[in-house]
Length: 277
Image (cartoon, rainbow, N blue to C red; front, side, top):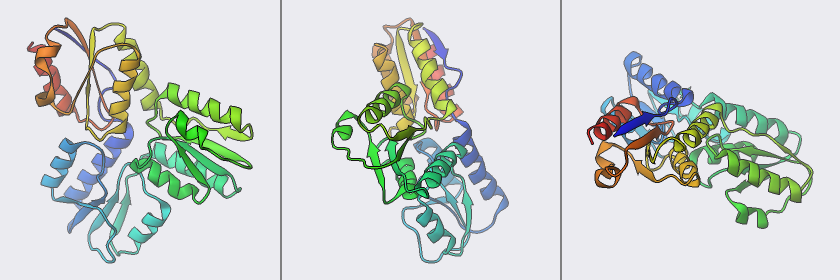
């Protein structure tokens, strides 16, 4: 089997920054260390951090010693304020690309604009962005959401940073056609653009695509959806143990990509398993 690995597979800048920040804190700081919510959406990375003594906080405690690290997806501003009041040393590992969206939303909120976020409802990043936009905020995940949308006055459209390019263009264009007084900011990050374009290109060269990443990773699932839209058979897996070897053995050329939170050691094991076929 010929295996072609996408150049942009694996950790993006924001994820690596968050992971490195956490490991540096472990190695250089004494006391308790925790992340507020899972640092990233990858079980294998979270297992490594747990072995290093890093806890995951689901709720904000009234008091806390040690260090609390804000996850890569960011948090609502009131959550950050509460974290700072706990007495812990708070390190912000929010992805800089997400911070950029937060700044845009905050700027226009102060001018009384409504915010429309094109993204996945209940995703950590989207919930964080909503906190910067409230109370005038809507989340659009699909065309059905547009049918129930009601907007008056000026508004902006932004995107969850890991959205699909084509879906964002279609949804934002439809919103603007119905409510012409809006401004569109394509805030999908460069890494996401490049990964999705690379998947489209790979699908023209291979007979099937293997997409590696956490089941809870939105950007990983999105890469699989991009490949499916290209008409390419898609195999999703978290690790090499999840691969459907029998089904994949019928293909001679297979492409491999991985979500932005998938570590290199997981990708290498998958490649080795595929090449053994």
